[in-house]
Image 1 (cartoon, rainbow, N blue to C red):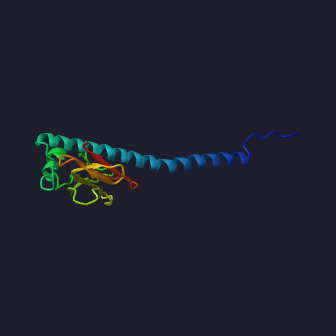
Image 2: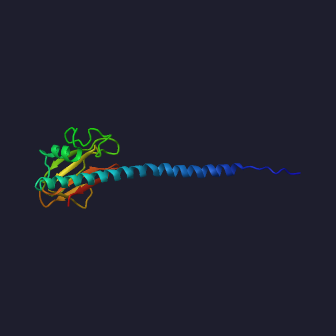
Image 3: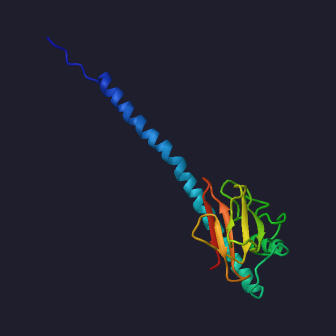
Length: 172
């Protein structure tokens, strides 16, 4: 008489574990990239909202854009309301809408007006939550560079995203 045993063979168990391991590996590889992409999307949205506030400032100030002497006023009146420290956009990052997704406040650094001979700026500053702000500029087709604007009413901002890509936005 032969006994009929029910159950899984060792090969079947190893095969199922190998497939499960591959699935977990794919999830753990894809998840960080997806999270980084979501954080960068939020950063781009924040930069777009900041550009919108620059446009509002321009409308309320006879077409002028802030410069190094008026940037603190712009930040306090148009981006925060109150409670800021200089150009920082988030003294209280728990309630402030212009904080990086990692919880660190953005900081606007005025880079000034165009003065260089080749009419481009390079935004190769480190990812330390600084937003580079340029007068008389517009975004060019090259990542991290701005071209000459058509006057002092044109601005461009740069922000280094996670992974090293550079966001450039302008009011054109």
